[in-house]
Structure formats: structure tokens, C-alpha cells
Length: 195
Image (tube, rainbow, N blue to C red; front, side, top):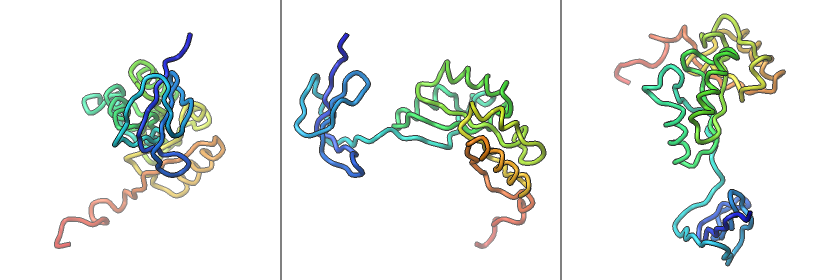
């Protein structure tokens, strides 16, 4: 069965680290050729359009499960796709927080059912995303997440962050830190005044 051919013509294409006026031949869902003066299959005029590789957003709040009145996997992934994103990393500040394989499995079911782009979960660094106390089981979660974050809550001791970094390094996963020291809240930060 032959795939449908399209030629995207007259667009400004980001190719070899620069923008150039080029044509792109697409067969099915794959780019077949990039060059000048190409005309294969159905011609689509892309004059005044920019063509770039898809974007990746490593910090997205889709709020599902638990806060779907704010955003859902379905609505958030549609909005991301509309903006040119095909991969997004989901922050774990949902309810229940993504701090166990059980909670991660619940989120993965929603992603499978509703996402229209690739959604990659992050797990929290600490249990219940408290920023203190017990680290999650990073070894157990690492194969299923792109990294760890207590987004919205800072890790409150250097020793706990150090331990988290060592475990994340061992599991070859990133730490996406929310850097905030709670002891400085309510008086330690810039607050309302003449400034």
C-alpha cells in the first residue's frame, strides 16, 4: 500500500542550524526529502510559514489526576500540540502525588486514554512531595519516569538534596529542582513596601 505524498512548498525551514526557503516532501508521516524546487504528490503552499522540528516542554502542569477542573491530560496535550509541542514532561504535583508505582500507573492509564502527544511523567523526589522526610524509591520509579521533581516545594535540607542527586545519578534520571527555602518565607523574601 503506497503512502500519500505531500510537498510543503515555499516555507522557511529550519535546517542545518539556519532558516532557508526550502521544500519538504512528506510520505505518510515521514520526511522523504528536503530541498529546492521539489514537487511530488499534493502541493501545500507554506508561504509565510516557519517549519521547525517539534518542540519539547520539560515543565508542564496538567493537573490530572486530582485537579482536572484546572487542566486535564486531554486539554493540555491538545493545547501543547496546537503550539507545536509533541513531547511534554508532566510535573508530579497532582493528587495523589506521583510518588509510587501505583500512583504512576493511574497517571499512565489517563495518558494512554487521553493524550494526543507524548507525555512523560516525572515522579516526586520526596514522599507526598513534602520537600523533607523520606525520598521516594527512585530505583523502582526510574524506569518509568524522565526525572524527579518536588515542583512547587523546595527540598529543605542540603543533605536530602545531596542524597536525592546521588540516587538520581545512579538511576540516570534528572532532578528538576524547585529552589525555595521555607525558612525565608514570610519576611525573608522581598515583600510589599516602598520598593
